[in-house]
Image (cartoon, rainbow, N blue to C red; front, side, top):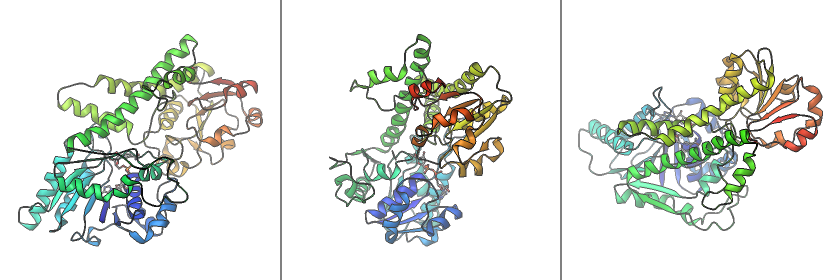
Length: 455
Ligand SMILES: NC(=O)c1ccc[n+]([C@@H]2O[C@H](COP(=O)([O-])OP(=O)(O)OC[C@H]3O[C@@H](n4cnc5c(N)ncnc54)[C@H](O)[C@@H]3O)[C@@H](O)[C@H]2O)c1
């Protein structure tokens, strides 16, 4: 099929490349000229494991452009809108990128049946709204009423940054919401190789053993939009639940890692997303829970559970600073080393990263902040050079003379650091393990003061 993907961020680019790999003819369009220029040179503008390799395998079937004039809407079967939907200052969702994309698409649709798909995470009701924008733009520029040559669908994305390619090729489900049966048929056909799992798996990313089919959920537009928000809110609640329990386990002398292990063995609960730490970050949980709360207000209801999950999450960040203050008594003039800056391992994304809040709080209290990360420093230097953090390419550079080390991101290489050689480099051998990730026994044996979350 012929596919246009508008927006080539983590979602749009991965989707476009994966569909091209499956044999569809794909055009990826983005207004960011720098991104498109890199993509045309065969380079990925984002750090995402496996993406450059898949781009190489798919290159015959994919093109990149900044212009709608490069797209033949007379043959275009599916148009994905995969632009950003960040938060507005009041917590609601900023739909300006979606609006611009929907209008540009509507103006250009031709008399060829096309499905316009919202892949961006958009508030409930946005499918109807996008339909109206497309219809007005389509009718407006052609001076006619649209004659049923397009339909709108919602196809929310569930990929995780850091394993976006894996999640796209081997998803746990595909959700398609639409009122028009033709749209559901067309998207089901588009995704057929994924649903049947009968495409040749790339050598660098084998198909998980036993995966022979992927479930598809077909529903109405609003339910598809709601599935995405409800899923993210549930995961956010689960993490915050572990973090709330961690605050109490620390007080009563219990160990949250043992508590969540014991809880997670119950198949009704499950072990995933139950790790206590300094909380979630990234481009989704914060903004999606905030948008959900904002939507509920429009309908005159409250969402106390989702709101509490947010409050608990952001409290974890101040807990780090309070704990350092408690341990060191004075933060002014202290050197704090942050191990990891990205919001999670395997990504260079810093959106809503806990590191940013922690660093800002510490700097406000007069501390010196040294930060290191295996892949996120390019973005850190580009977007957060004014923050006042000293960015260090090597962990040992960040750690030198530190009064405390905070493990912010659980990159595996930090577990493999030579902690015995590091201790003499420090002013004070204090480690705050924000992810309960390091080997506590070993560190204590080496003479470190180890503070974890909820233990
Ligand atoms: N990142 C994730 O893990 C993830 C997972 C699931 C869903 N989502 C959702 O998917 C959407 C995209 O997220 P992302 O992380 O890929 O965003 P992103 O910020 O990485 O990418 C968005 C891209 O859209 C481009 N863009 C903006 N306006 C445009 C326009 N009018 N025309 C063409 N391109 C335009 C931007 O230049 C950018 O490259 C969001 O709604 C997000 O909530 C993200």
